[in-house]
Amino acid sequence: MNASIINCRLCPRLVKWREDIAREKKREFRDWTYWGKPVPSFGDPKARVLIVGLAPGAHGANRTGRMFTGDSSGKWLFRALHKAGFANQPTWEHRDDGLKLLDCYITAACHCAPPGNKPLPAEITNCNRYLQEELSQMKPRVVITLGKIAFDTYLKTRGIKPLPAFAHNQVYDFDPVVLASYHPSRQNTNTGKLTEPMFDAVFAQARERLQD
Image (tube, rainbow, N blue to C red; front, side, top):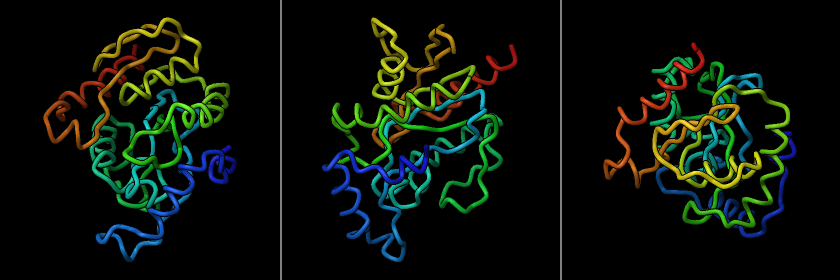
């Protein structure tokens, strides 16, 4: 399935954007060869913890080719995963850095970097076939959604109606259980809307749920 994701060209706006970014680059990363394609999911497909993110960052995963790798959101996520025992190290800079997820799998509502970090509803719909396939094959015990778009997308994919209100570190007793978190974006972390203790609490709660 990841091969299908990598070769996907269903959304013309996203194809143009991700490839333009890969050519133009950011001055800081001018020596990099950008990935510039849809970013596949990452981790153990037999994992008990499933993380659903929003979309690759233009100069993060769109550059490195691995989910949440190479930008500040990934720095926050992998630090928290390592602290909770879901990653072997907190390293997050490139896809050959030895990072392994432990009992954890990361996917996204949209696998292409979108302009302004905001995929259109139709683009999320186009990408949803991949999440549906993953959910049909996986049997997680805990699902962690990063941000409201990921939260809504996951629940809609599961056919859950009406959608409950989103709240950080809220537990939703579906099967599997859902834990909601603010996304570790700069917008949230730089303003203090999301702090390290707040973020760590989500993964600590996931660990507790697995031990119950």
